[in-house]
Image (cartoon, rainbow, N blue to C red; front, side):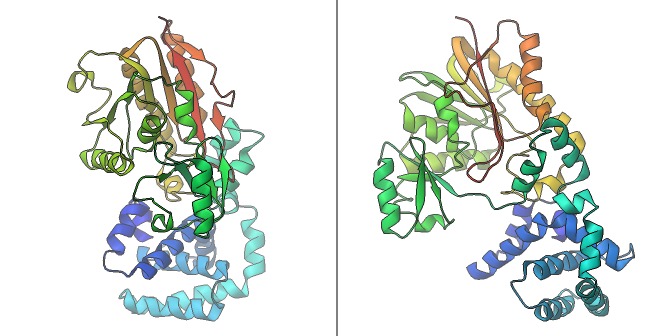
Length: 408
């Protein structure tokens, strides 16, 4: 938690911390970090109110955040949490902080009702998002902002995408049931699990019969209007879920680009597991001179980098690591990518612009500015008749989709 507070991603911090831990310890540590980050606004406010000092060492403050979340979760007796937090001071080499940690946690237990009343008037503590984030969501989604913020603090659903080249949806659903895994069918190839489970428990996962992919993300391939024999570009492909989905649905010639070599290798491994083939290249899709041979594409998927504001329940560190200025920076990069990728689209072709953001500045604003500056571009209706903006819900994350057409 101290590393995250200093600006490191949770994934990187957990990787550093769990190298030598047993799997049970890794699971417990991950759960503690996720829970603390989902309550980050609250636990930060509590420490400010209780400690009344600004010179707390970062690792001690982080210990208090974790302990305060543990108290709220009520998974353990309060005295156990306090005792273990005090013992942790010794393990961290912070013996002099034992009395301070003990006093702070006990004060929280004594003043719980008064503290909760005080926190109710603090929007960051109430909604567990930074103030600038709350303000953006309120402005962009005036009638839905509370639901969006609440969804961002919840547990993300676990969804599967069945590979139709290897099995059928109903057949795989029966295999799940036989394995004691309950799931509800969604669409042609999707399943939402009633309870998340490790991939190792999924029947024939290693054989490529199924992949883990959010139901909202699974909308992508159907919106591309794919046809056999087309040349298709997935411009920002990692980790490869959407590339795989395209190849599972239609026989096309797919080029998948990824900026980082390690992430491109993840794409290759995912496609290999599923028995699929594509041209996977390490390249910056906006620098056409480094990868493009002049051949035009019938379909382009521009799943562009963004703030990921629609998937924060899967990555609860994101909302605390992002800054308001990052939204404009992302939007500028998205506009650059969209302009470059339009050049490789064939006449009569279609480009699908996708983000996992709920911020207007990264979505409609980018597309509308592009349409205003590119007279030949046309916004096309989405083939499934659904909304451009999917807001996070119990069954899917938040995504934005815009389909653009180039005249023949």
